[in-house]
Image (cartoon, rainbow, N blue to C red; front, side):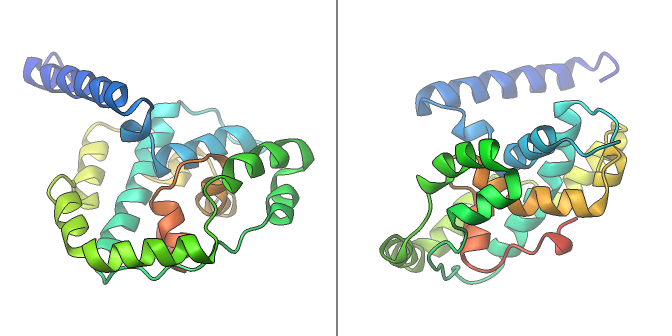
Length: 200
């Protein structure tokens, strides 16, 4: 930040408020959503031959992915959810027996059945305009985020992290299954709108 005291003050204020938000919520929910799940996948599955990258560098890239996904979803009508299509066999097949069993235990706790999907659809149908309004009021456009990252010489794509497209596509698609936290990744996949190729 080149000794920019205003920038340093803004960063410090953001970090303090983030910590307060996590304390109030009793967990890291306000500061750790889909972007962190994708990063965790990258670290867990460790693509062979890829150079090491810092967690913050990964978050720079994955934040852009999530910003694009949110923009797309918020610009349209309320999503229409179905019961989650992923089952235990899918998770174990992808991650292997040991990691897969742990991931399934996490994912199964948030996995939608028909009744849960119907309840969430009813809620979204009634409140979608207000949800969009509240999120949009605090959202930074993906183009703005990308410009800020480039100005800071931070990575903005999977290639900048030394990852190949196929691995990163898998990271975006499978990240939702590694933790019991319902994010925009879940909302998108349960409504048939999670298309990693369009986000990376």
